[in-house]
Image 1: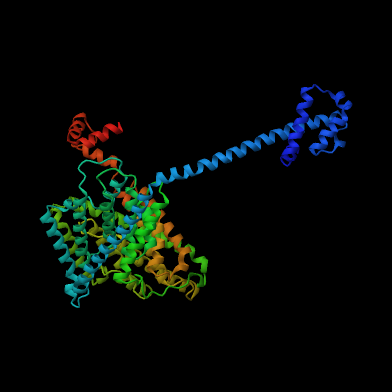
Image 2 (image 1 turned 135 degrees about the vertical axis):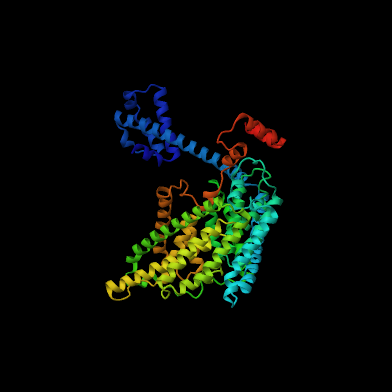
Length: 589
């Protein structure tokens, strides 16, 4: 209480009390002397602002001494705090300037923003060109009125791609442009040996984009979103000059490219930004400037596509029901969670088919350049003899058709489409055909969700004798997001993407959608890790196939592939290095 009172004591009063204490201590004035000179004490106390009646005895004088010492300590403490505040005000601008220097100079911040806009603009134009070529092929072949031409169109695409591989000397001549390779370059702190030049990588990326246009324009059962992201990633790698020198901002530049690619490919800028954060995973010290750069790249890419190709959402004409208006309402959340478990099993089966297909292509005695042709022949046979044209790539039209007919298509037809899509997509993606797995994942989830919704509708009519739950279209849309999330390892992107591609028409389904996507991703990783024995199942699709800089360097040095780097192998590798690379190793040593 005395210290609290001293804090409120005026400065002059504390000084007078301290004067009294010092005077008494210096003159060795005891208690008796204080009684003899009571008028002197009362006069000093009155000048200090204390009532004199409180100090009529020795106890009052001792209290005065303690009170004065406390007041003096508080005054000194207050002065130290004021001095510290002055020092803080003096050094705060320096700290802010030092933080700004770490984030980059003003010129670097501005150039980074313009670089992101250029990445988004170039990526958007490249995606528009890709889609226009694909649409030309669709109108001439896939949408042809002759069913024989429709069924045979994938063979034409596979033959063209096999011919290109034969001319180039194999598909490995176009390696180094995939997103895992770019991520390896962006996160490496050293220049890895035998890294292709920026210009060569750009040529290879352009060639792979052309092959993707051939693959999709002839109806082969893959998707354009993977090539869009790869194209935008290589645009970012070109602007960032990946591979020429180590850079701390390479991962941020690659994230801007990926955001632009997904934003342009799906016409979904917000999903592109989330995808960049989930897949590329910039550094922990990612600055706000890098986040702004991703916003600029995604916005620019999506704007270019909307101006040149239109802004219509991919999921069009779909009548979603309001989740909150159903009879069960929030009691249906467990039903969506069970749908997520079903989709997790479907994507685990797809991963298994893809793995077995890769082993099949590695074991057959047919040269690898002919594998795309064989995969396209298999697809054409299934489409023609099974009468399943929905397996062919036609943009989002086939997915929209399944969504519209989710409550009308026969269960047997949906089941056949689901099984055939898993098989032909797994075979095609490992054969050398150029395309992504986003569209197959959406189709698999749409078909699986439609089957689940139909079965739920049949069961509810048996139990309740009436329809009380949501329609099958809602389960079909949720299944699409769940399969995309678990197959590609991007749960948040899948949720945001479904909202954007449906034009916000199904926003009320967010709550059960989260449960569906979460359980699908969890079960897929659980099955792959503990049942199928995949040690890296908890990673995204990009991280599963990406090679770390250390692993790539080890593979480069280990010539005989025995898992051990001998002294001779290291000396041979070191002798091939150029002087700048040797100096870099010496500096790091």
